[in-house]
View: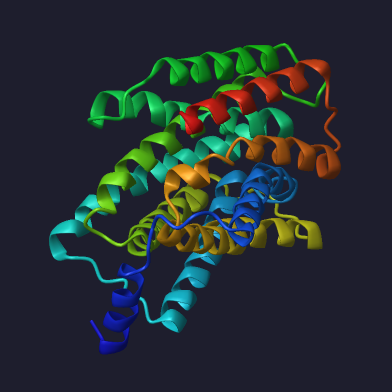
Length: 305
């Protein structure tokens, strides 16, 4: 590793990871929650002109360029030990499934439904952690959070006026959420031996050719329409969510505990539904509002206790 990179990493390793949240940090976390909430909305916009698999190709192509450029400017090494290279392929394949479920599912349901079902992944993470991570048990309060989230999902299913949605679309987005939870759990183990930036970058390197082959095999003949809104949606998914948000997230974790930061995650579906209403024109119905509030309450409880 170059001397400059070693010095940078040495400085990072001495940063206190348990600093109290400042006003600036809270605003950054809320900004991330807003941007993450807009991901499904940007997928819906992109799908108006780009087939689902091609949209994934463009997303990861942009993300790779952005993350690689940042690592070069920051002097961060992307090297991975030879014995760890094959391991990265496992969460990469899960990531590929997650994005496929999301893009295909979002095409078949409303933006608001997709936002809510996508935000169930923390509950799946909590359930998995109960069985595989010592000390991370499902307490009575966490179980209450799971019940609140389940009630929110059940209530949302009855929403028929919020926008065009189908049971298949909802189920596919829920499968994407479950896949994301599995990917997070695998990555939790990997980042103990590989830097988070390297984990994400090389997963994207593995996923990009997979999606490219799938696109050529299944969507090559489908028409593509490009306009400023669709270009902005692609850049949002690649440069903002997969690039900028990830880097800000890593920076925050270097200074604050994950528990402190995750306390604000309940705002993500709130911002997502708001953006779906503003950009996609989804109706905010009584069922949707009730489901959203129950999910947000469940998220707060699971991350708070």
